Image (cartoon, rainbow, N blue to C red; front, side):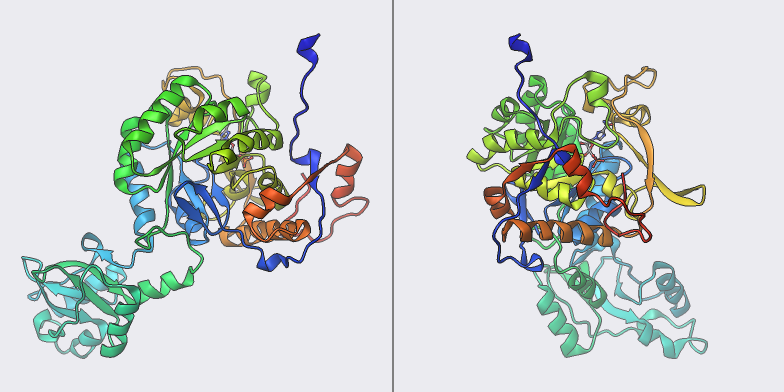
Length: 486
Ligand code: RVP
């Protein structure tokens, strides 16, 4: 029958990258990319918008390492705004007024000493009731007063010739001021000498530590956030809070109602809008005229049961290739989301046409993921659950599956709740992931991510070939940091 004349669809284990002539040393391979039309990353990696993967802690970690965290949406709008702000402020050069610890001139030395200790700061601008900067007080100023002059007022001990700067100060200028005047903090003031922020030496040094971070034009970390397919208010709130990329988060974005609202959201926000998930050429064609990025993945996720529950899905390598065929003509970045277990899978997804990859299970076991470490039979784990699992749907994620949010609902889940081995720091997981992808770039002779997309060719692998590719006929004695048997 015509019905059974079906095209072959392939996934990660069905293919390998064909080794090609190369002069590329893996360490020199450039992994920078675009995640959406206007947002660039230094590594092509995103953490999944899942409530056991990405909250502000993960988003800050991802962005500092050069990738992007996408905040999940099982939280109310107020919490979401707060989480976005935490990311945007994490590495800000100028600490904002509301976060600056200040002292009043009439406070006693012992009060201010205790206050600074509680807040974990070693100095504070001294301001009057109008917030005019009068001086600055530091541990060094206080020390001579301890014990003998503890009840003296701050105005006695403070330095009243304060070196200040204005909002537009750069890190370099601030450092020069600190160097010239042998100080560690510079209050930022407006035209009327009111305190509007603070730059600290410690803050500048911390920013330097993350030289590969993904930053916006103002030097703040970039932040992604997922919103429901019909949630325009929330998208606008995310935009106002400073999110750089808004992900319209739906398990089936080829739903035309979803596309209608996504288009409206795109019209009403400044942030880039990535729409997903889709898995076919036809779906991509509906998105290319407005989306800033397209996310691909129908059913490949490690915790996902969409394919068994609904009987629908697309093996991921084919899905990415189909979507990328269409999206590349319009110069729209493609993100391969789900099913990536090893660094090799990630570079295969790029070779199939993706500009970046999104992972959930790979990161769920790290310190930066929400949730605590649990111990079972002497081994450490962290919780990892699908956003389509009963638990996650009950926590507010049902609309991802185009279902009503309703606590009494007996949900038909499309995901499971699970545990994943505890892995330690995100930075070392990313080191392995990116390093493995760079090895892949060496094997195909690609210097950049666009080169991988253009050059790489696949070979088809049999099940015998697949078995040959894993360690075989041996007993592993020491676990490798980037391999565990499935
Ligand atoms: P993985 O990296 O294989 O763990 O997959 C993560 C992806 O799985 C997510 O980014 C999301 O697209 C998808 N997901 C999340 N929840 C569910 C589900 O419950 N079915 N699927």
